[in-house]
Length: 269
Image 1: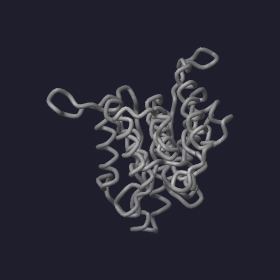
Image 2 (image 1 turned 90 degrees about the vertical axis):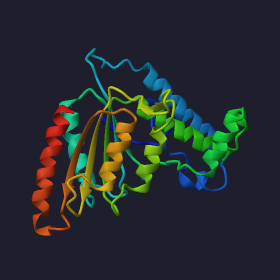
Image 3 (image 1 turned 180 degrees about the horizontal axis):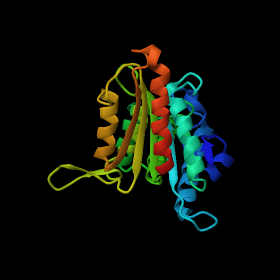
Image 4 (image 1 turned 135 degrees about the horizontal axis):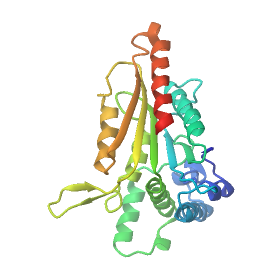
């Protein structure tokens, strides 16, 4: 069964959700003393739940952990990429009824961007400052950042769905990619100074909708393909619905073809 991101500790304990920590008014405004406590509980819950998970259902059959990352503020009624994502999940849950699924919309949770707070926190930690001596905002952002890294590493399958906006991914998706691109955790530098991906055995699917026709060679598709390959993911598939705005008369046919591809991918993903 798919589970949407939920801010409650009950939701976190059963299906860990990392992001919603009083939303951005806390992270960008006056620190709330309760934010740090909640953020640490969220990260603890994520680590405990997934470290205890042995990859089998109650019936003893193998299960997978799927993370769906949605990067669009609109729902499937108004977003083509979200409509494709909904269809993927519908077919996937029917084909893999025992799998654990986290369905997470980046516009409904707090995603820390790499900013002065994070740089300051990393510098202090590097100098030996205890985590508890960081200020509240630094603690919250570090906790969220590490929480998304941990969540990603504990997944078997990743689906990323987004629109093509101005030839790029939405900024919140870029911020999430930064959270999972971490030296020493998802990549490292070898003796020659070359980067090597550390993420192996995962599979990823990229779903994107675009008004023009790019044949998945647009900067957004290339960016995600490059970044996921950079951290070591080799099993990577793309499904694109393209040209609906360029040729509105064929929009329904284009979407129908993309929906068929999504259904086929979901059945075997």
